Image 1: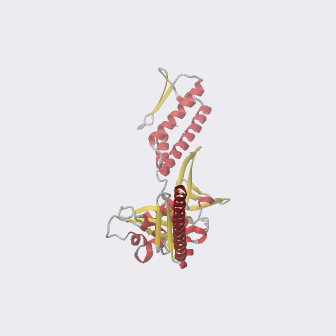
Image 2 (image 1 turned 30 degrees about the horizontal axis):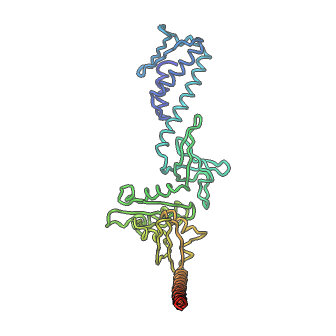
Image 3 (image 1 turned 120 degrees about the horizontal axis):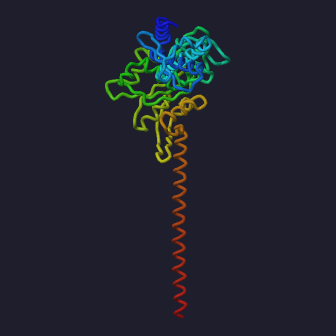
Amino acid sequence: MDKESLLRLVDMLHKDKDIDKDIVFQGIESALESAARKHLKTDEPISIKIDRETGEIAAIQGEHEIDLSDLGRITAQTAKQVIIQKIKEAERDVVFDEYIGRKGTIVSGMVQHFEGSTIFVNLGKTEGYLPKSEQISNEYHRSGERVRCLVAEVKKAGHKVKILLSRTHPSFVRQLFELEVPEIPEKIVEIKGLVREAGYRTKIAVYSEDSNVDCVGACVGVRGTRIKNIVDELNGEKIDIIRWDDVPEVFIPNTLKPAEVTGILLSPENQVATVVVPNDQLSLAIGKRGQNVRLASKLAGWDIDIITEVELEREREREEADNLTGEKAGEAEEVGEAEEAEEAMLNKDTGNDENKE
């Protein structure tokens, strides 16, 4: 290859593959060194340098210069294969470096093809895969459809980069809120916690240090536009936006929304909260298959027991009855002790009279 062609090749790879020119030059130099050692059948170090400006190639073995034109066609083929391999590795590294930096963020792509239940998404320079376990259960995708996913994992696999995508990860919802609610990236509103059962329900706790900012209203948006966009992206998944509070007696009832709470009793030693709800709110507080209370418990970091007002009243009546029974038993015990004391005194007096006689 002449010098001009070499420089054109390097420039083309730099523009088309976004590979740094110096990396391409190093790959070619490494390939030529390997090919030269094989052709000359020597273990002696061979150094090949390419002038980055002119494309001039200088090859040196020990103190002697080598004419690379003498290496032959087979050696040139070997060098070509090594160069291709180096370029693929460099291309892989470029993709890896880009997407490892985007881990935990949302990317947009097009559904390319299916392999079983796994969806492969064209991301432009590369593709990602969306396995069944990372797909929302109640949604379906078609070839050519645009789809947004979270970059969940990035790793090298041979000459390729495997990019695991997810639509079920809690961070997917967190990122959607950051995209839709500008107050969150601006640090005006803070996401304090988020729990999710993908496809069914998400609970997100938000807070703002600015008392003039309605953190829940900011997430909902004017006429609900912001939250609607997020719900539409999640195919109708229910989202409860909860006002965070550092006082458990305030925050725990909030986590059970949309259910109403009329009372709460905390047991900090075992991190258990007993929550009282109206009778007609019990099923709403527990949720379908226990989903609402389960998510609330995860978000609050407390085990939550739910009882109704009727159950609470019965418990109080039972405690009062137990206390009354205890009091009566105590009185009876006191009477018994008094009678025993009196009888002992009588026996003592009788004994004294007998001794006098």
